[in-house]
Length: 331
Image (cartoon, rainbow, N blue to C red; front, side, top):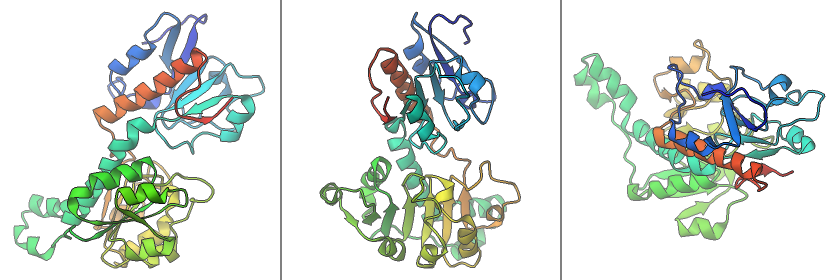
């Protein structure tokens, strides 16, 4: 639904939330939060970057993966008061620009905590049981080869996490019934809280040397970009799997490809890539020990609705003079 008047609190929703049929991925119920007489909202024109001509028209922008750069504000003081992310990562938003202009940036951890944790567990199960390969065998009628592709049991295996914030913590809680050993590296983690859920904090090298399933659950920033490099990948067990549902540039993709191609590690589950969408000729797609998804493995009805509800509530909070619950930048 679109509105045309300009005397209300105007909210723009980036069009990358629309499915091919034109309907929003989060359904209609979440929009009830914005269904009030003092708010008008609309889907913005398709664009990979928010432009100053668009910012000029809105008090709030709810963004999926559309980027907000230093040039997005233009020369004029913005009307914009908040950018509400449908998600927790904010590497698509230029933080200094928001801070300088006094624009709130909010995220939606409640919407992704469980869905992304479930996604990591999904990859663990798919990789440990070699589901992707057994699917190919079955479709090709090659049943006799199933004994040549024995999976990896989870009992007493080591589940490791690079980063153990909301999503990493939730993942470990979900993995409890598998009777695995839990380790993590996170300089900001509370050792007492980690001990309560059975997670042993270790240094970075120990994490990579010990994990049978190594999950990436940290944000992308200057310190984590390229952190998972050839040296660390080279420390992993030949039987180990790497799972990345965070951000692609955290992992050196070329180093990972070489390790997978040469069977230096057993396999990988990748929802994110250095460049997205991933190119069709990316060599990772030619490997038979990699499971890939299009930065959307966590996309479920519950996940999308939760993200939208959180983003829209942040918009209403700012409109009514309150700080958003999950603010990244303050005014």
